[in-house]
Amino acid sequence: MRIISWEEMQALDANCLYFGLLPLQLMENAGAAIAREVVASSPGKRVAIVAGRGNNGGDAFVAARHLSGYNATVYLLGRSRDISTEEARRNWEILERLHLDLREIKDAEDLMLDECDLIVDAIFGTGVRGRVSGLEAEAIDAINRSGKKVLSVDIPSGLGTNKAVRADYVVTFHRPKPDLGERVIVADIGIPPGAELFVGPGDLGLLKKRSSESHKGDSGRILVIGGGPYTGAPALTALAALRAGADIVTVAAPARAAKTISCFSPNLIVRELSEDHLSANDLQPLQDLIAAHDVVVMGMGLGRHPDTRDAIASIIPLAEKVVIDADALLPGLPLKGLVTPHAGEFQRISGISLIDLDYKERTELVRGYAWERGVTILLKGKVDLITDGEIVRANTTGNPGMTVGGTGDVLAGIAAAFYARASALRAASAAAFVNGRAGDLVYLEKGFGMLATDVVEMIPQAMRF
Ligand SMILES: NC(=O)C1=CN([C@@H]2O[C@H](COP(=O)(O)OP(=O)(O)OC[C@H]3O[C@@H](n4cnc5c(N)ncnc54)[C@H](O)[C@@H]3O)[C@@H](O)[C@H]2O)[C@H](O)CC1
Ligand SMILES: [K+]
Image (tube, rainbow, N blue to C red; front, side):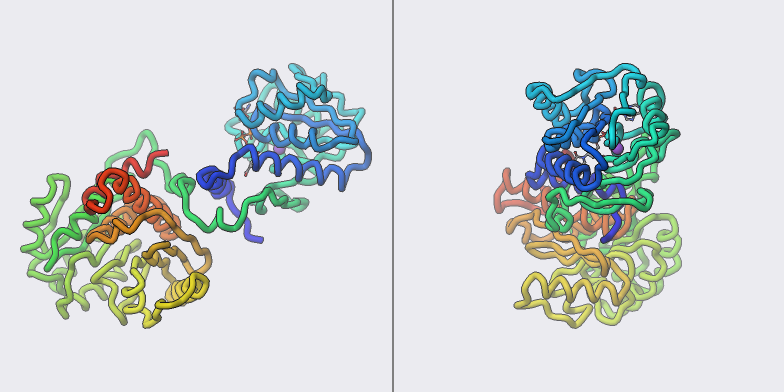
């Protein structure tokens, strides 16, 4: 089973909530799973549950309720009015009303661990931060000194801090996580595969955060190489990258196009290339520009001049991170980074037709192609597919109004901005979600009268949750 990181698990939790799977439901399943393991492994019927005031404790409150027939005592570290989450509080209150054996303790000496056959450790889960001291630290010491068998809920409490429980075994939820040691039981808590397949707001949390001390350029410098016969397309990409949080966006465009692009917005920095189409003559200045940016996004509005094709072929290998879109999607060219075709463009580069195939067949073909070429593909469609050749994600935001020209250019800009802060797979997944959601928000106001510029303006709102 694939190991997922704690931050991926947090993102998955957020997506579950977005799809309507409530934390209280997951907690019920988590607690029931803990109780099942207690029954399966306890040497006797006396169980001491040592709980903190977060959701890890909440899981254990549920477990206590499922342990009828056992002699379970719940020790809450601190006061019940300080329980920090709604879900844990609700489960605590049920135990109170039903008169289970509950003890709110101020001192670790009040833990009667000698009397039990098994300790359930639910002091901290993934929410532990900083140093552990005071009551929690003393309780961890008491558990470690007890000589009793210890089952940790989700993670040995305090793992990764100055003080941690030494667990005999860990019951973790949904998937194995890193650093849990050897005796790990993975419990299903009712998260179906779709919750991992479909992109949601949790994926935005996987982009590297802007720190409070960030400087100009820290959150991404994006170079758009586009324009020629068309000027609106690269401008949309550039503005979308800015609205998606990039700090600096430069558009490098053929001479005449550059002048028009400059007129679209004072927010754009535009560099003029030497001719009226992209050509090998511009490789030197472009190389310098590429070195000064984190991500290159290219193709929008470039046109099909034969010199342009050769220039594109030379540029792609120069960029460390590149988003390849629209007129840069040509057969026989090198591929790298993130490739953003619709089905027609996919066929153009790969020779693979996706017409009349069902979802599974399409996915396998696109995944296989991404694997073979060593790139991430964002296949745009009614359901967007995102794959790096191993992992497959799908996005269902968006609406038929988005067939208006330019929304693909907007998507490329968002993807480029996110790519500066994450892997191609994470960037493309979050970008597809945000672009479609922005379109859905515009649809509410403008219906099918939506313009790509409206979608650009809605990006910040689509990123807020
Ligand atoms: N992953 C899932 O799908 C599910 C996880 N569940 C369980 O929820 C916990 C995470 O819960 P959370 O409330 O975020 O955090 P914790 O319970 O780990 O602890 C938070 C609690 O502790 C306080 N705190 C944090 N650090 C310290 C410190 N150094 N010293 C003192 N106090 C500290 C903080 O203020 C909070 O009060 C996860 O592990 C799972 O067990 C769901 O129930 C099921 C779905
Ligand atoms: K724990």
